[in-house]
Image (tube, rainbow, N blue to C red; front, side):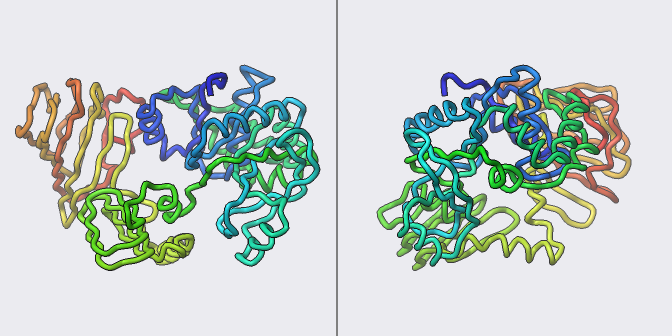
Length: 427
């Protein structure tokens, strides 16, 4: 929206470089990037943003939006926001209710109370995700809306209500913001203080308990993309109702969502399935049961598996690296270094590295030598040798790195110099 300021982004510290890459990709320069040292749910995250913004603008109005929602009608959304802002200026904490199009148990609901003005209503109550039967009764009765999880309120009003309802949380977050430290364009919230905050959602901590809640009826296409089946619902479908991403071949497939992350996927005679292929796992599920994926993840967690928490692509300030293959005494990675990006000047005690340039130009520091490598050229970095890789070119640099040695962990790094002021655990 034209009259909105730049966004304040709150993200986990582990996702910081991915967040920057995605913001750059869509041409957004954030007002601030706040890093959560630990997850404490949405209420502390919003509180941190509110306290940070209030330092520069005590009368600021916040529009709180999760990063994974899809809004299909921007004009309708802007109109709803305008009503919400006007209502927030009167001291209300405003949420958005989406008129339901079907009786689904995928969303929580809001029951609207008395009309305040236009499309604005008092909040009578919030309802947890209901059973399918209960959802059908809500639609039959009317006055119930999907809980969008988006909010508008004055930063000061939210902080006041949080202090009244959750004083321990506010004290902890205030201390985390007061003790925050700048780091490469990010603002790191103090870990000890933020960890002391209770973990709770903004709904539970404030919205369900405040006397100042209001709801704007927002008649627009909206999805919180809470499951793989939601991507099928919002995706562009072929004549058989399929949505595909990546290298996919279909034959007699109907109403499927198929995502091929890296390999070719063929689907024969399937109907109403979700098929997701990534480099570390494959999911096949009935489309109407895609919400149950969280139970699969919980099973993986109990089995001490790592696929759901450790991904093959790891983002760094200079670009990213991906695991390609690994075995006893060796590991193969693909590195992408952004134009102007450079890895730290470093050394490994227990591994050697071979670098092969796939595309772009690599500037290599190896011991006292500095030289450039072009496509199809390579070099060898012996154990114990100081080295650095950087990209002096105008386009991405792609490298295949083969590591060999007795230990290949990322903590085998002695850093001598780093453009990004990182500690010894990051490349």
